[in-house]
Length: 269
Image (cartoon, rainbow, N blue to C red; front, side):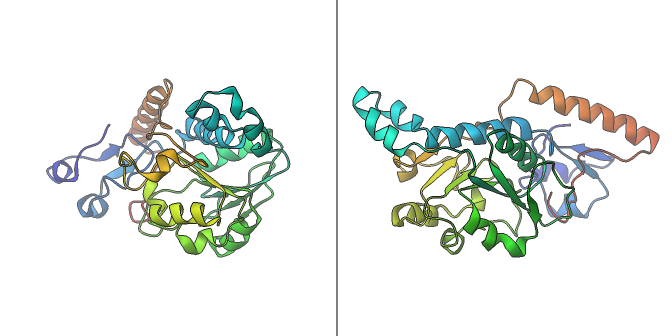
């Protein structure tokens, strides 16, 4: 229960079950772990609540101009902020990756009166209120339809630098990109160029590539960007949820029952 570096994992002799702290397992998926018989589970499906809340904190900060007011607290910005404020009501949100985090984001978007579309490579169950869950071949359609695009993907070989200039060209010039999962899913240089060239309007990022984002990087001070230092995973209730799942899986392992939050080691999620 926890996380060990790949070189330490390679020393194991009797390990049967590895419950990784963290939803993503990209940092621990060594060839030795993938090829082993060790069962791997993680916090996937359990961090969605606070990641979704953070996604909306970033989104609302941008749409209501809160980031501008906080950077330079002065009443003279009042009219400028009011002119640029946006509503989420009746806007379209596209969620790329519809696992635990994507579902929690969708539930909150529906509470704001948004239309919600989603993309997932797997045959995931429907979610009440979500208009459609498409396969990745319809990603261009989702991007071209969405006022807000939220990334809910794990980091794998297939998703590494998935969001490049090619995808930004398919988004609306007024669109906002939100990423609270893994920074390397977005190619940062192309994101900066897309913002400056008007391919998209803004971005809310809790994760970046590189991470930490260097001091003085243009994303820190861009007028239509909010960056938080990988803090979306923080919650006073997170550890309790992880421990409950871990203990439940120990009982299930002993009883020969199916386990929760399992990772497909070859897929990477």
